[in-house]
Length: 133
Length: 134
Image 1 (spheres, each protein chain N blue to C red):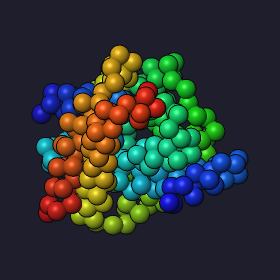
Image 2 (image 1 turned 90 degrees about the vertical axis):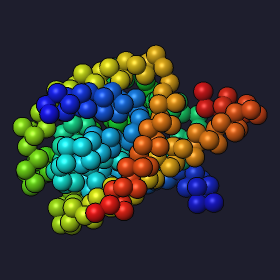
Image 3 (image 1 turned 60 degrees about the vertical axis):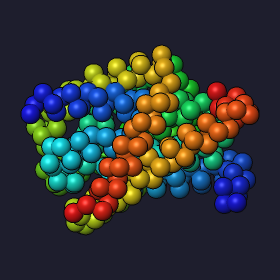
Image 4 (image 1 turned 180 degrees about the vertical axis):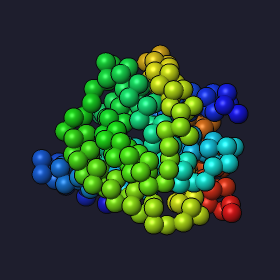
């Protein structure tokens, strides 16, 4: 259903712009609900990410300080990595891609949960929380 | 222990560039291979390179800016190779433009800590299904 797709796109983009979900939420929707194959979902997610982040950055850039030196190096070597990663993605099965995606999600979600709980338990001492803000 | 070593290495200019180059390459590869997730590696890299003093929202913004060119390259090749056509993506793309602005604006008002935790549970569950499912 077209309208559900639009709503899912809007929500996934809004959450991604807030740093929630590690950029994988739309892939989850596309594969679990829209019943799309993994590789196609990944391709659409990349296009989607370009739109969501360009518009989000228009807002973020005004208020945030970017570590430009790090960003420049990341972008340069990352571009080469992207070529490697994509050609790999087109040489393996959807099944393997799905497993790799599963590992990424479990890692991303798991590390967020661990961080939240450790911050919560350290919060009473007050030290770490002060440092992060 | 490895963390400490990397931090020491990144203390001078050259070491910083080397560590950043490594994390950039890794992030680009993962982002191209899985179509997402490169930002997670960059954020981890910046924790090592720039330390805890960097504001988490600044760190996030830097990660997204760095990922943009990688995603552009990856998206282009996906589009060429596997028929991830703009028509398939159309409903998501137009919604993404508005969703992106909305989320970014919302983040200037709130810090989405609870939201992050709630979605982390969902993500772990989806990851479990993706890994162990058919």
